[in-house]
Each structure stands twice: as structure tokens, then as C-alpha cells.
Length: 245
Ligand SMILES: NC(=O)c1ccc[n+]([C@@H]2O[C@H](COP(=O)([O-])OP(=O)(O)OC[C@H]3O[C@@H](n4cnc5c(N)ncnc54)[C@H](O)[C@@H]3O)[C@@H](O)[C@H]2O)c1
Image (cartoon, rainbow, N blue to C red; front, side, top):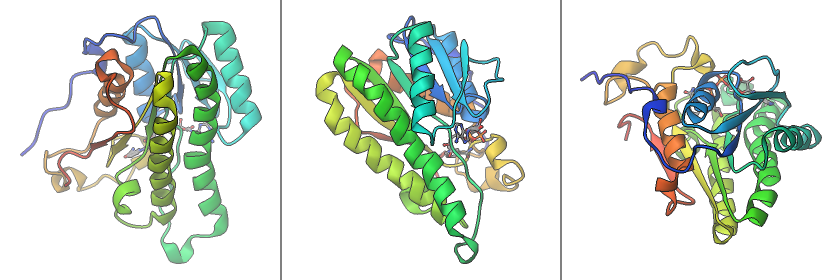
């Protein structure tokens, strides 16, 4: 069975996003770029953080390496100064280079954990303080199916980093819900972005709904979790895998 592609996530009608300020990491490509476009079309003011500030997508494009606490702090400070208090954070910055465990050296392990897990921690920690003091916030992190079941092949480092993102998200959710900050995680399996370039042959047939995911599938889930309609949802893992299990 082949299902049709999703409509653009920005065509959803959602309350609670328009007029709010969001930070999206990894905004320069793939899922982060579509999340940025979606939140902007739904009326949010979006600051994007990526390694380079060249993207035309966000209202405010900021260069920062999410592994670097000082750079993260400076980017958030600029977003606050230019757009106002940050009320939503979506952490899409991430890397995946498949390496079999026998060839996985400490440098690649550390790089992957630092960007995917520590980068999520640093951005969430920086966002949480002001959100908790304001009594409102929405944080959506991006894990992966690999973070739940170990993935398909050559991804021990990636799976470990994404499993960590799930545990981190659940812990943050417990600590923050009473202060009005809801924290959830989206876990896609395979999404058509530059990260999977050259790796998607034959994948459509392997997925029960008949296609790999599109960035709009992820952006729709993120937008829902940022919206007022999800105000009773926190610490949840929203799996997007086309019926893989
Ligand atoms: N594409 C998939 O199949 C898939 C599946 C599950 C989860 N994910 C996750 O979704 C997120 C987005 O992935 P994507 O597919 O859009 O990939 P992508 O490669 O298209 O985009 C990732 C973005 O993160 C940025 N980035 C990388 N390192 C950074 C750093 N240190 N500091 C700041 N920015 C940095 C890159 O410059 C890039 O713009 C990632 O966390 C990825 O692990 C992707």
C-alpha cells in the first residue's frame, strides 16, 4: 500500500502558537527547516540556530554550535533581545554517520553524543530557566526510532545518543510541568532529509504505510505538541514510523 504525502504542516489550524517566540536548532536543513517554516506560517516568531547563520528560513538566523554552552547562551540572549522571551524550543540539530561498532572510535562516539545529547541538554537548560520563571513553555526534542530499539545497523553511537534524549526529555518533563513547561520528544524512524541522502533505497517498501517520512510529518507532530491542544501532554514519546511496529 502506498499512502499519499502529508499536506504541509503549516496548513493545520492550531491554537496557542501565533505570536509566541520559538527557538529551533538545526534550522538550516531538513526537519529543522520545515519546523521553522511551519511555526512561522502558524504565526510564531522564530529564531533559528545552526552552525552557519545563512538560512533564509527563520526570522532571526543565529550561528552557534549546540555543543558550546557559551555560544548557546549568546544565541538565546540575542533571540531574547531581538524577538522577546523564548516560549518554545525545538531541538533538531543532530548528526548521524553510520559506523559499525568494530570501527567506531572514541572521536566519532564523542562527537555524536556531544551534538545529539549534550547539545539538547544545553539548549533545553538555557531555555528552561526563563520559561519556568514565566510559568509557560513548550520544549520538543527530536529522538529517533534508534533511540528506542537500537536502530537497524551501524548506529550504536547514534542510538545511544537518541536513547539519552528520551531519558533526558522525560526527566525534564517531570521537573518542569508544575511550572507550566511541557517537554515532549518526537521519535521518527526514517525521514527524507539530507541526513539520509543515499541511504533510502528500498525503504519505502519496508515501511507498512508505503513510504518513508517527510519533514512535514515531523513538523505536524512538533506543531501539535507546541500548541494549546497538547496542554495535557508532557514526558511523551511520539513515535513517527509509518507503522514500522
Ligand atoms: N532524517 C531522519 O531520518 C531522522 C530520523 C530520526 C531522527 N532524526 C533527527 O532529526 C534531527 C534533524 O535531522 P535531519 O534529518 O533534518 O538532518 P539534517 O542533516 O538535514 O539537519 C541537521 C541540522 O543540524 C545542524 N547541526 C549539526 N551539528 C550541529 C551543531 N553542532 N550545532 C548546531 N547545528 C548543528 C546541521 O548543520 C543541519 O542543518 C536530528 O536530530 C536527527 O538525528 C532524523
